[in-house]
Image (cartoon, rainbow, N blue to C red; front, side, top):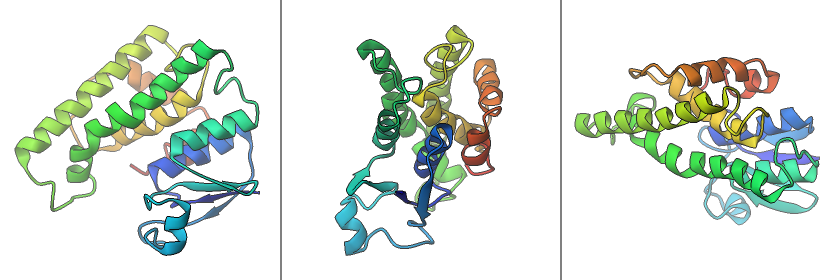
Length: 207
């Protein structure tokens, strides 16, 4: 059985759990991370030298990086609806997955650490204001894309891009900041909330 190592409240672990829910994959979850088993131990670092979750073990192999894990699971279970086989169609999905992992994630780091985590290292009001502005600007880019499709990130069909971006949308919606009106993002949030996997692992009260 697929083994997932990671804290079930982690946003990156929840990507994998939601992907498993969409595909119908049974798994064993071991809790690792802050407040659980430590990820800086020799055992865990041998699995992932970055000391980060999630990590999966499947068929005698180990894999880390949440977006790569989601791609692997969709490929293994031949879910071409989630990750297309056609080269360009697949690249369009992966483009938005990569944007989530690099551009969008980097935009919210300071604001999230200041407003949600209450980090003592993130108390500069100027940096916070800039962080909120940057986060909202990136969400505006997503809003424009969703307005153009009137459905999911990459078009009419739900894909892995919606798994990773759906988690990010919930993080933004739950953060205690002034949210500009983004009607396409709001409609998307409600559309995703019709999926059981999103209710369980996305819109579940966790930022």
